[in-house]
Length: 450
Image 1 (cartoon, rainbow, N blue to C red):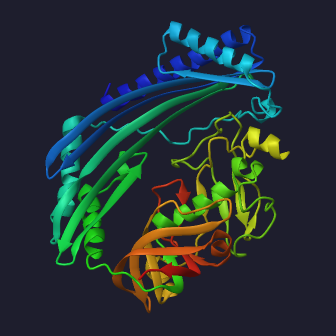
Image 2: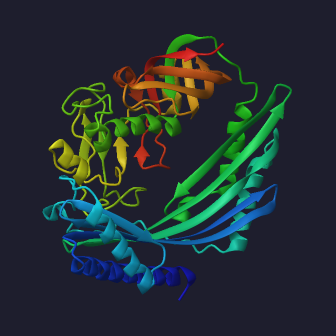
Image 3: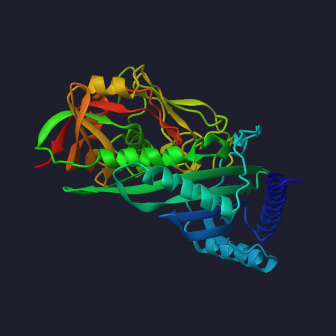
């Protein structure tokens, strides 16, 4: 049996063990007086190697375990967790969760997700691809990534390269009789480089993240990409304050979708802490704009047949024709709002932003004269009011051509206006996230600089 087969066999054994423990703990919690119970358990293993200037900096093997129990005594809830799967520790966890529940206030909306919503189909979503990578091979790969960048003229230093190989086994089970198992892998290569000239130094990076290491391609090319990005930042300037169109590069554009998800998520809505309260069924984006959730996407970075409560997931439109079709809800927030769970306890699953026909060069031409944002910093976003203000760096563009790099500037708008004024989405999709979008062009924003 080869190494990959042995790892896969071990993961199945771990999954069986977690499932058996989860069912046993649930039975014992019910015997202790709980009316409902649920368990989330996981084992995460990985190898992480960091190299800098051709030398090993760190090598880390990880194996983390988690076992969380939540019990309900009617509408009173108690939770406890442990990383120790021995019988005494699990018994103490049951006792702690039950003790907490007996003394908490009742919450009319507490409880498991509806039994009728549990997933019954658990297809193979192609999420598990263990990487047969030992320490020596990981070190060699990290050096290759870094050397690919350091070999480019103009690169003067390195912040190091990282190689990671990880896999997770998880089980969610509850007293409805649902037991859901998942196995997944996530592997990464990254490097950060430094370049300097008479005007100062600049740093940038690049990375790849995949479920299947066979999709990495040429490791040195990652270093080369990081070098190109770093050198392109040399001679960065500030801009005078103005209003102009803004193009968000794909790796930044996905944050705009993330703010939208935050604003339409149950917790923000039932607390009345969102600028999109009561906006389901209303126009919030241009008529051509669409976002679809695809939980069963083969190999997707957030694919799952069920959410964190066991509720079945399904393909669904979030935005169609620019209209918000629904909110993003688990069972608790849905009950608070008088609605039904959307299968999003724990988050969203593979959001696909519908793209136009333009590649990145075409999006620059559509931008014409304006700002290309390649990095955003700070936390200046209010989901409550929609106010958006973030420090950014990138490039000034004229007549569809990049002219010079810019830094130490701020862009600002209200998200309500920003979303309404999106002009186009490019087909240059960044596949390194569960939010799949190309570059996003906004008609006009305020740029604050000198």
